[in-house]
Image (cartoon, rainbow, N blue to C red):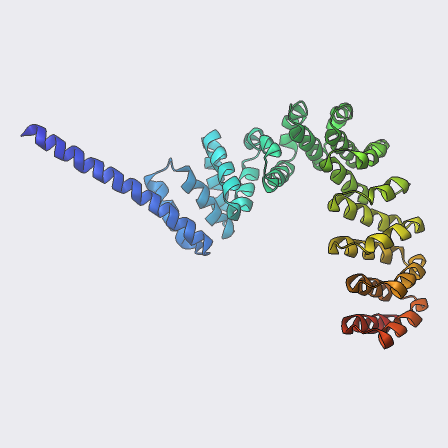
Amino acid sequence: MLRKIIVVISFLFLVSFISCGQKGINDLEIARQEIQERAYTQAEIRLEKLLGKQPQNLEARCLLTVAYNRQNKTQKLETAVGKMREIGKPAIEKAIDIMRREQIFEEDMSKVLTLIGEPAVDYVIPLLADKTEYVRENAVAILIDIGTPAVDHLRKSLNSPDVLIRSGSAKILGEIGDKTSIQSLIKELNDPDSLVKVESAIALYKLGEKGYVKTIVDGLKSDTVLARRSAAKALQDVVENLAIEPLIKALSDTDAQVRIAVIRTLGKIKNPRAINPLIENLKSKDADIRNASADSLREIGEPAVMPLVNLVKQEQDIAVLQKAIQTLGEIGDKRAIDVLEKIYAEHSNSLVKQEAAVALNKIE
């Protein structure tokens, strides 16, 4: 008889335990749904109750920071983050896990990890080598925002066997602006990987060391597309005394991001020697490359007018023709009036005629 009673009690306890656990899971999923539906107050109340019963529930703790963050409840958010900082590794890893698998919460978790600060740094640095681009970008942003407390950790990471961690660490050190890292970055210019060299040279430039621009320019010839992209984007801010020949050669790059960045750099330099190569890129089938080329030709201005007029006279592609006409209108040079009037009067395409009319109004 006693044995039966014990069995019954054990069974009831087990059912109660499972039921409570299931309710916790249900509350968690309901709160997640409430956050997605912007019912933040309801989610906050639900999650606070759940944590009262299950203080070890790290998923609930992270989601509660989301509810606080989206209501701008700064004090509550800081208190919640402080608790996560006390918990340490498990809480930090849970925040990273949520950031990686649920993009709707990535900004919230990025903010939480930033607020946790230095204790999160060694867990975020490995994300610089994550296979997903948005995770890598988040990691860079978090470490930049953490700032000076991350510097020593990042300098150590320059010795990582992983190229993306080394290059990412160099990039972040430049963005943080800590000049005590200069010597460490100079050493990285001897790295066997071109991406690390380029990011180190870019970082040094941002730290005031202007003598390594050639290393950035040489990055345009790298076999690694990430190195070419980094070099091309950085050169948009390095326009003084910049040689034009390597940039013109880079216009034949197979990667659109590299070409677009180089095109924009040529527009900033305003060297007339770039006009014909830019005209050729204006004919691209890629709309982003066409738009960037048009912007740079507009920046160069008056010297680009007659090459654009010649293009308009003979171009058959409607998209290219429209963009060239638009650019002439934005430059505003009267030498374009005759060809634009002819286009308006004779062209069979109504969209082209309309573009010519708009350009003429801008010039006249």
